[in-house]
Length: 306
Image 1: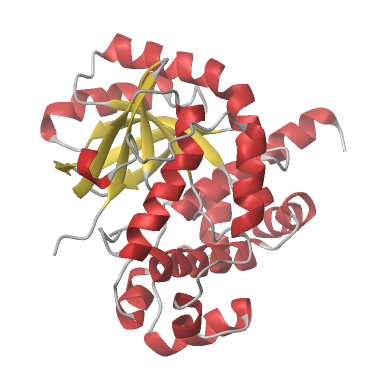
Image 2 (image 1 turned 30 degrees about the vertical axis):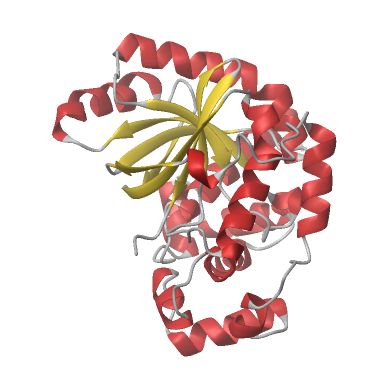
């Protein structure tokens, strides 16, 4: 396959993956997605398997079940509620979950550690310079603030993966981050944030399959209608930006005096420990880091209100 052809299909498949991640209920079938990326059903289906290693149908199903596994891990929603959030009936979710994980959702929820967890944490530690906070002076529940955020549209780049997503994120982040901060400055978006995170569910998704992103969160409010039009008309295509809806609501905010590279691993350990011990539960799977400075960032964790 020619290099130009490979690049063409890499972008098409990446676009299809982005469309799936903005479809929490799995309402778009493979023919719809093929049409949305302007490819034939047959070509798209064949190339997705060839280049991604699994069919689009299997990928989309796995993504939704992994989302359910994340809810089981970090929320106290019932299995029935989790099934509905992921676009399943209770019975179809339980059946699909057993097929993927060889155990029931209830059994999975009781696991202390997940199969991918140790490897994910080990590889993240190798790829970063994690901050050491043994006394929990920084990553402390007492330092979190309860904040309310509006609904957002995220305009984002998927960072190169190379089977080591966190290492690639560290390597490529600077260029993408600089471009996004420049866009933010041009549009003068006082309520927007440049953020990074993973599209997938940590630590459920296999480490090599995880996709990291960096993007601009723009509030979905009437005051930002012009900014959204400018993003879509001026910057989205030229910068290869995808879109994803990020729900607002209650979040835990934790400012930390370190870079996102240093914060990533202790952030996850703090979130996991807090959820397991009951300090808070998550209302969604996707926490993110706001990139506020070289040696400062802010962590946002969607939380269930009680």
